[in-house]
Image (cartoon, rainbow, N blue to C red; front, side):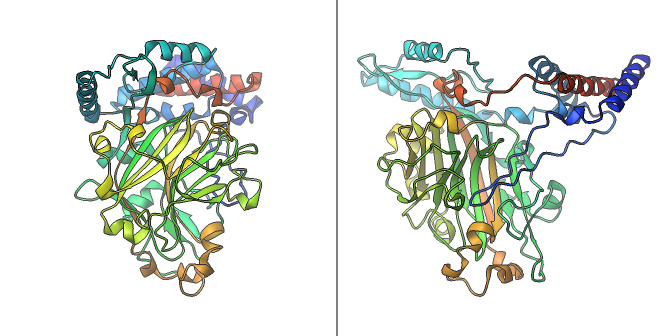
Length: 485
């Protein structure tokens, strides 16, 4: 007790002398959104309550030694509380065993066919050596391997299950965004307490994930409608993202999306894997970046809407591709029992597929995906005209339901919907179909990504200032002392 008291006394003197030091290196929450002028909003750092060392560590600086100390203290506290670290993602869980068995079966089939199945160790080592100074990211899954053909040439690496977001534990790995709608719509993004208590976020009897807009409250003109927006604690630079849904939200003025975005928007890019609007039955895939990234035609079958991904031009329309399948969004998607959206992000570019429920590949349902067998993607951002490594990094996963705003509001007159978008927001019955039914989201990795293939995309961080380092050390000491009291 005496030692902890001394530490707190020292901290009080330090913070009195340097009142602003603790926030000198705060990180930004990724809240910028499509089709809007970015509005920079910093995450609010609130000192934790006594006895909660986890919250205090959020204010640490990015110094490597302090990061190690913070990580050690955070893991110690999580272990004491018997909790899994949400920043590691949910992990593969039992599905990892199933996927491993499927890989063994596929390997055995290739060997029986004389195709060979030994790991391409030489190719992997060559890639690792070429990534000078890059560190392999920590993974909750075993190391994947690349396969070789009968001539010994390297083929595509095996995708191994890394994280499963599904069921009742889904919510443990996402936070609720509560800031103003960056797309300037009448959307009231609610916190977790309101979302759960008012039935805007829950699991149904089948343990499917439900996220819905408020469809019970009548509003006055100009009032905002409640809705959820969540983002993952874990960040990703590359991977294979497979989203299985039974239903996506739709309705006049409704703008749902499943997307990934970097913390320093738009420097680290944004990938809109699924984006619907109004009553449309066609998904739109869009990339948003800094200057120097354009969409190269060819290699995909979707309809090109725009080719310049730069957020500073064309009102931040990005480079967009529309799926010509009339079952990739909205009511028709629901009518066929949903489907699967898949996004592959690696050094070959960023590709997106959509599979209606009747056409979902067996390797996807077997949890052993092989994109090389899926045929031409619906959309593909080629590295030929866009350096994927430098434009995309450190993405969180986001689900949201927005209303009107920069895109849904601008296209309302041509949507076939009645009246005006803002007037439509007033009627709760308009939002009876504005909800997600999510079966699962699985994220896969491979040997090359685990070896740091895209590590060059990680942002360079400057040397922290003395005050910033002292502030981080002070907060770490506070957290440690708090845990002792």
